Length: 356
Image 1 (cartoon, rainbow, N blue to C red):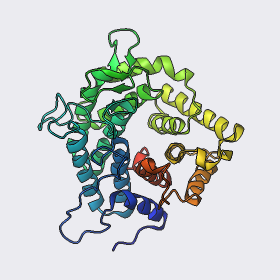
Image 2 (image 1 turned 45 degrees about the horizontal axis):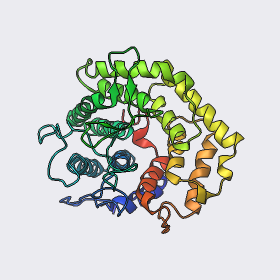
Image 3 (image 1 turned 120 degrees about the horizontal axis):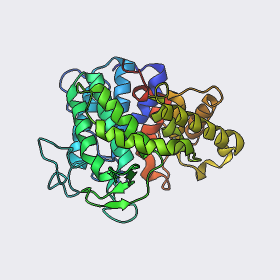
């Protein structure tokens, strides 16, 4: 058994609760990702959770120098594509996709319910996180095929989520149906345009064709240009992910610099002025706060670094992570809490220049 670096012990413990993976491989690797627990994903998979899973495996590879963690990431990718890239009964690829182009129909969220307000469909911010995970796997393995898949997914879903593309200011929808035929929620996600802009640029920079995704990036840039100056939030996950996505180009794009500054401003308001952490932990959600920690982890700020440590320590003390004590009220969030906790402990692959 390999020796886990001290700073990665809790990271590994949390990831093991979700994926039950081998820490060392002597010969044949026959691991398959176990289904997420009942209620935590459809047919055992949930796109956001598994995107974090892929990225965390890449982090494990870098921190331990054990290449089999990249194999685990690749197996998880294939499993997600074969589950969430299919209809809920698994009888067919999503409309528009084929065995040759498995992501041409997008990827389902993985909600346990088929319909209703919290039913299955496709989320833009889940899709961009998956594209980012594929891109990082491409960088880590040196295999361009993963970034090619991310680009194919990006091109496939963009026309479904972005409309009025010929107008001066395109618009976006937050949630689409499983087959991308119609919107399920017309409201625009607070971060969807900047997620699109940053993620598509990351994919473009990794691609051998510098003009790839140029039209899509132009669409996102026009939306972001009219929105970023008014960004504000009091949501811990939203603030953390804003800081994370902005840090990729905070030294190059005015909108990214401004968004990072706004996220830090609002984090200070939430944690220093309104004293959010005084709220009883039973009235809070771990994964949302781990999003804050991730943002702080990739964009270090002296007065906020202690906040991230305080959040992690509070949830450890509450028995939520890294080995969760059973709590029926939080049961459906167990996997997402654990993978985001791991990323909060060691952001690794989420961080700019980590793989270069």
